[in-house]
Figure 1: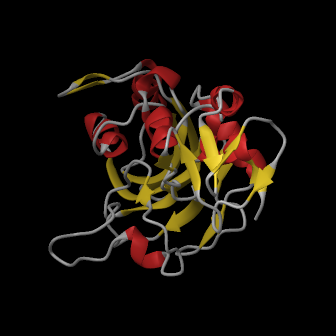
Figure 2: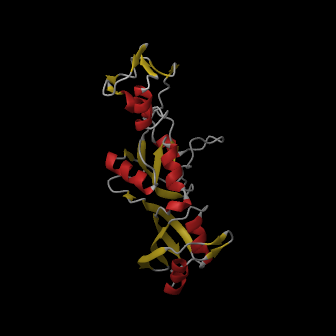
Figure 3: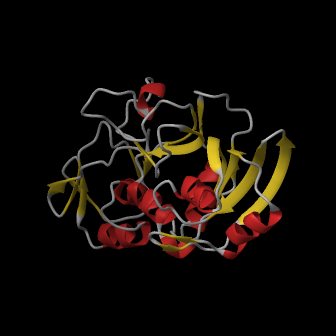
Length: 243
């Protein structure tokens, strides 16, 4: 597909689009051996040889973005040395080299982003941006409001005090309860440890929301590509300017 030359250079990760325009105007870019010095021309990187400063342009793999509804029993990793099932086994049609964004432990289900966009993944996981993650936990015994208030204020774990959480008691049945909890930190098994710290055991845990995305319309074990608007919003949340 023919695209503007500066866009092709930017997509290859060599420079921003504006810097690529300067390269073209300076006569540093050739297409099939011909020096290009004007902006606006469109070329096909799949069939034409594009060079910058005499070096062939290496095209970066196209970025892809998926939202997966992870079931229990799958590891949140690209591959496992012991041959156990990983979340990528649920995306057999995806040919790009993708990775899960963050982790859900083996017994936790729910929303997990899968992508090959390392810049976005690192931005969303950076503590600076405090990206919200919402879980629904089935716990026992039923926690008191006083205990839930401890989570709302921040509770001390072995690796330090947690940030205040947003906590809602959803339902109570016999000796179990469903509790919604929103945090923005990403410590290992954090939600389970927070409930353990108030004397409550997590029987089931599901992440239902991440960075404004939800599981709406995505069945357990299924996935869908993110929309362009969703990807743009994730970039804003991660504080990254798209090229």
